[in-house]
Amino acid sequence: MSEAGQLVDHEARARIANDLDSTLVVEAAAGTGKTTALVERILSLLRTGKATLRTLVAVTFTEKAAGEMKLRLRTEIEKARSKASSPAEQQHLNEALRQLEAAHIGTIHAFCADMLRERPVEAKVDPLFEVASEDESERLYDEAFTRWFQASRACSVARPASAIRMVRVPRFARPGATSSSSATSLPRTSAPTSIARPRSTR
Ligand SMILES: Nc1ncnc2c1ncn2[C@@H]1O[C@H](COP(=O)(O)OP(=O)(O)OP(=O)(O)O)[C@@H](O)[C@H]1O
Ligand SMILES: [Mg+2]
Image 1 (spheres, rainbow, N blue to C red):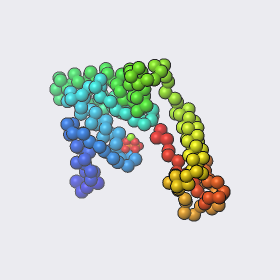
Image 2: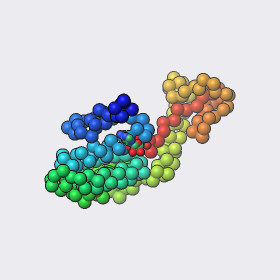
Image 3: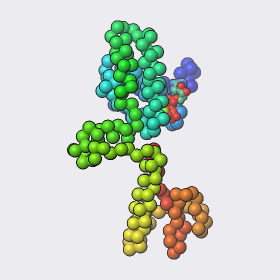
Image 4: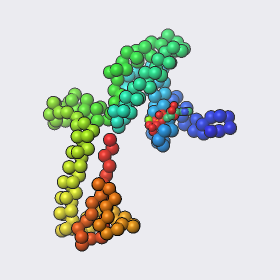
């Protein structure tokens, strides 16, 4: 907080809300106000008529975050509507409220699924495909990872250099120790290792 009671990054926050003609990439730590800033930017776009909820897309990684964003946007639109500065602004906000339920504010996988359903022939997918649930996709991911890893290990017996790139040797690993359920050890002839398993993004 600065001496004037403003946050030290208030200029960046104001730019997110008001610089609507620039493309911005914002990176910030947990709980610092990303969703608040994004909702404020969306509100500015709607209020000024630069965008409508039909033409705007906001994606998140989880259902929970998407639900929260929609809820916060509804609250902010309703607040802004009650103090609109012109009939045009009032009309834009009324329209936004009507479109909110159908707006593309959701998870990135739901957005991708919508696009694939629109063009299944071009995408070469079964039009009746379903998006796996978070639990199911985690299980499928583990299965695919295990299959890939076993195949890579089989390969690395013939080409040891690829195994060296693939594994990371922990500094203080004890022989035979595994640190978590996703840790795996190399065959006994090698040094104890754990695998740097890529994490699912959801
Ligand atoms: N400019 C601000 N001044 C004061 N408080 C703020 C400001 N922006 C956001 N907050 C408050 O900070 C809290 C976290 O905000 P928000 O949920 O937007 O953060 P986030 O970065 O999206 O969090 P997460 O990483 O959990 O998604 C909320 O209570 C919000 O009201
Ligand atoms: Mg957030």
